Image (cartoon, rainbow, N blue to C red; front, side, top):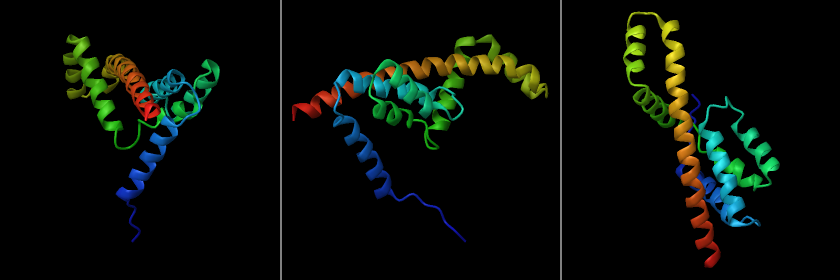
Length: 152
């Protein structure tokens, strides 16, 4: 029987490689941080597998760091996906309020298709907010990390 395992040292190496690639980028700190922010936004936003490609394309269009944009889009992975999906659904459901009760009632009564529309809007509202917040935070965190790294 084949066992697939991700060894911790390998994961640490990958994370360290991405970190070093970002902080050692031969680009201005704001351009690298902007790349990470675009990547993070598109990584969290439901792009149906195109986040990495879209991050690269937008990095080219906006003339920001392409490697940082691609690295930032890797925030969405099998470990973080459930967290972001759940957070988006909870936030969107909370902001819509009364719609949440309607969605749950329709789902319980078996009328799934009647609940899909409002559930989709709730999820997308929450996801847009979560994507934007994480993108802004990642911009400032990345900018600070790069500035500290370059001082040393």
